[in-house]
Image (spheres, rainbow, N blue to C red):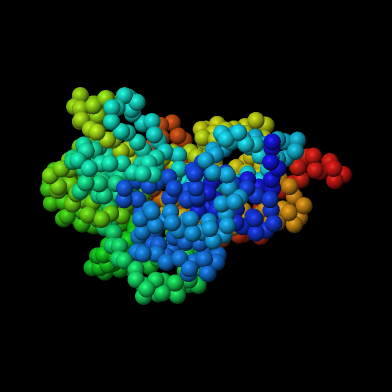
Length: 544
């Protein structure tokens, strides 16, 4: 049986839930497919120890419905995964969304049929869909790099990626545990399990700039205060540079050295990402400013570590990369963990991991670290990975994974030339994951998609696709904006350099969330300039 739809949504995370809700409210026949057994997206898959927000809870919410916002109360500023997952369930129940999703089913193939102008979609559960619109709400960081090391299958203990942590957790008490990777995820794991495990070895390749998290509990008074700001946040968040409540307030050149220091101290003490996302925008463009702010953060980290050997391993050096050009993690006593007698930082930059052996981790010099559990916090094939893992074939047999293997290009991060009626959220060349509060950006992107599909219905158009010229114009604008930043000059998942062979490009739009929103609006207001909107061949013939 093949089910015929107006739209099929892939994914039941923040974007997928809202996308389905919008299209269903507009009267479209829409269905969703989700690989997990329930809603949640990233908050379904990432249930590793210590997983939590680093966006403030009261801004990581949907803003299209005031009652939906106010009828949920957060327990603290940065809640942990179980509470976030409960919030996702609350949204799904409140909007009655589960009935329109198929769970535990993974989309494996999607083919655009040019004769009909529709997509044929298959899942690993044996279902087939015939849909006019295909919408990938598959997440920016949802394609884990699970097979990173030779010999993983030989390990006698338990080895897993953080994004595949079991629902029931793992018994780590008294175990010899190794964590590979100290990005934002690895840091959350390390600081959480250190008091529980018998011994902890952290394999450190690239030192990270970190900021301390302050996470006060919320009582009735605090909840009432943030809920009273609903209209303020609804108006403010979409217009800021990063979709957070705060924005860049100061210009570096306007302040004296003493005033700059005071700003850095104040924002560092805020216990949030404010130092990164609201202090001085010049840190992203000016190497001298970047150097000074980076030195400030290094000083703060070194003062906590004290030990020269740990400082050498864990604190970035002045020639490595600048603060803010990589993802900045928030942490709670993470650095102090390394002062515990059961924790060892193992540097692997000059002596890298060679392979996984039955006993544990073997380094290039032959040293073997014996372990019972290996937790790999080794990241994702960001932006393009989740959709590229589906066999998506557009016009003329072109495949999305092949196109992106050559050059990662999109139009607004919302569509791709050669793939009519395929929409995306959290995709490359849109504000997504990097420098963006994800709920702010995903709401905007899904709303643009809904408006576009509604417009097509109202005007009788049945297919939309970026023109080659339109896509080239967006890629050029994206690159000009990104290449003006220091981000483009560094190696990280922001540029795809964590995946061997992946074409290099800054994956997220760096021109600002508010600017991106305005550009999307202008394109729609100008009749979807840069897009070819047309009737599908079969329907055009019937109309004639």
